Length: 265
Picture (cartoon, rainbow, N blue to C red):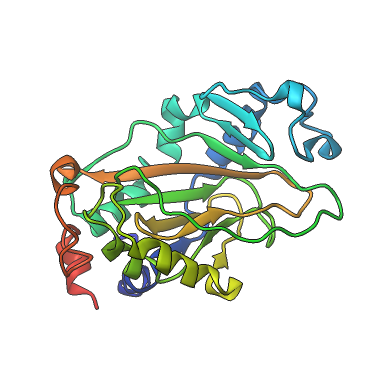
């Protein structure tokens, strides 16, 4: 049975993102939540929500790329190379079926790891609200998935997207995948940022995932709740991405995607 419906694919093509609920193994989500506490900042205690409030203490910050801790961000990447993390997300039956539909069976690299668990710590009580910002990822990939391993409430640091921005940003680069922006990128970026209603902040529960196009404008939003936002992220790349990234955008944003994607309008 295919993971995505025609309406799912149609929505993804139009909006640049797609949310699917409860598709990851709940036991593996629980395991990830537990393992997050293998190497926390020293003063942050699993059973003390008051200790989760950011920013991370200056003397507890770490530049270790495998367990980065700074400000309101905690990126526990070391865990991402353990095989069960890949089984939870990129190698799960649902995700593999969805990727087959989007990119084409046997046309992509099946990830052996994920980026890790990316946490956004809560703001202090009464913190002033911060303006949104927007970026497009610089590294080459086809699309990515952000998945939640715990509850993420509205305003809880959920992954924020600018719907339909992929339809502009794709053509604001000299190539399909490489980080070679034209001057038009900043013009379009400013236009999307001009009204906060242009963006959509996702939220959900354990096992929910968000697909997003590689040229989608997005941000990790600020967390105004009392919970840590915990997300697992993974990328998918076509087998011949190294060659394709040298190609200009052309006229068709979906030229490299599956036949199924091309046929659905």
